[in-house]
Image 1: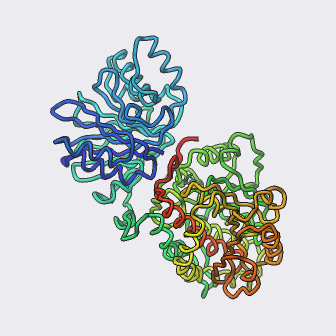
Image 2 (image 1 turned 60 degrees about the vertical axis):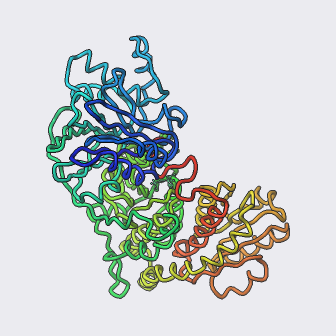
Image 3 (image 1 turned 90 degrees about the vertical axis):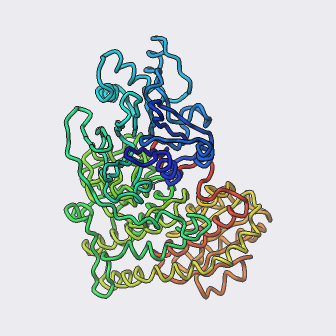
Length: 612
Ligand code: G6P
C-alpha cells in the first residue's frame, strides 16, 4: 500500500513523478503529494483525493525542478486529508520524506520528541520518522546519510522511504525494509518507485533494493549500502515488461482488459513448461527442492484474499492427485497462532504482488521453524519471490485492476502444474490421467476464450440484478472456492454484500436469507457433485430464490429450474475453476460499472497490502 516515486536527473521531475504516481495508484489512492526543489527551496504540494487532483493543482504552477519525490497514499495513521498526505516536512522544513509502510514504535518516538518541544502537524507515523531523523542529525552533527542510518536502527516496522534535502539538492536518500523499492538506472538519471511500472517507459535496467539497504542517489551516481554501512555492488537486472502491458489498450477499465487477457496469460504461464504431446511438464524454478515437495508429509499453503482462494482450489487438487495432506491458511492467522510445523512439511506461499505483509511474515515464521518455502508470485523480483527458497512465477503480466482476475487463473495454472508434476513423480496418478490432464490444461486458454464470449449475455443479467442488496454464491468441491471468489469479486468492486458458501452448508444458516429478492449464483458444472448441487438448487427454488446457474454446455436439467443459465465449455472438474470463474468476474464487473463504481480502484482497497 502507498506508492512511491522519485526522480533525479535532467528532466522535469514533476512530470515524471505525477505520471509514475498514476501508474502506482492501484497501491493507494486517498491522497497524493510531491516534493521538489525550486530555486533552492524545498517545496511540498499535496492534495486529498486521486493523483489527478494533485495534477490539476500542479498544472497552474510553473514548476521547475530536476529532483523530486512523490507519494500516493492508502491511509494507515490518520484520515485521508491534505495534512496527512505525504511528503512530510521535517521540523526545520529542510527535509521531506515519503514513506510506504508502518513504523510500529512511532508513538514512543513521538512522545520523546514532543517532550523535547517538537510539534507535529499530521497524525502520521511518517512525519515522526522525518522529525526523528532530523533530530538525530542535529544532535550528532552528522551527515543526513548517517542520521538516516542511525534512525533506521531505532525504528521498528516496515518501510520504504525516500528523503529529499534542501541542503543537498542533487541527492536522494532511500531505504527499505519490508516494503518494496526499485531503482531505475538511466543515463545520468535515476528513478525510484514501489514497483517497476513507473520506470519502464524510461529504462529497462533496474536494481531491486534488498531489505536493510540504503541507496544514495545523485544524477551521476548510485551507491548502495547496508544499514550497517557496508557498501554493496548494485545488481542491475533487465526488466522484461512492455509499456503496453501497463496501459488500458482500448478497454474502459484495466479490470476488463485483464479479464479478457486470460487466454493469453494462462497460455504464457504454461509456455515452455508444459507440452501435452511429449508429456513434458517442468517448472524451471523448482529443481533443487523438488524432492521436498514430492516427499512432503504435509503441504501448508499461506495466502490472503484471492490468492487464498487459489490455495483452496489447490488443496482439492493436491489431495486428490498427490495424496498429500494440505492445509490452506490465511497468512494473517497462521503467523500469530504458533503453528506446528514439522520436519517434512513444506509451505507454498501464493501472492500476486509478492509484497503482502501477512504472507511475508507467515513465510518468515515458517522459515524460522525450518520449513522450505515455495513462492507462487506474479511480480518478478518481489519480496516473496526473493525470500522463498524456490518457486514459480505466474507470468500473468502486470495486474493493475485492484480486484484480482488474471492473477487468479494464472495462480491456478501454476498450482496445477506443480501438483501434476508432484503426483507424477510420486506415482499417485495414473499415466493416462496425467496425460489426460495435460491435454485438458493445454485447452484451457481456448475454453476461457469461449467463456469470454458470454460477455453480452452476462451484461444483460447484470442489468437485472444491479440493484440487489445481497448475493449468495454456492458451489461444491472444486467449485466451492470459485463461489468464494465470485462473492469476493462482487463485494470488492460493486459494494453489494455477497457471501460464498459450500452449497451444502447453505441449509445451516444462509438459507434463512433466501426469499424472492435474493439472487443465488450456483456454480453447477457437470462434476462429481452435480446431483447434489441440483438438490441444493431445488432447495433455493422452494424458497423462491432467483437462481443464476453456471452450467456445463449442453446441460438439460438445470435450465428447467434456474431463472438464468450461463453455459461454459466442459473440462476436467479439477480444471473447471479456471473456466467457471470467468462469468463471475464478468458479472461483478458489469454490475459495478452499472452502479457507477470505480472498478479499478474500489473504495478503501489497495492492491498491494504491505501493512498487516
Ligand atoms: C489485496 C488485493 C486482493 C488480493 C490480496 C492478496 O486485498 O486487493 O486482490 O487478492 O490483497 O494479495 P496478493 O498480492 O498477496 O495476492
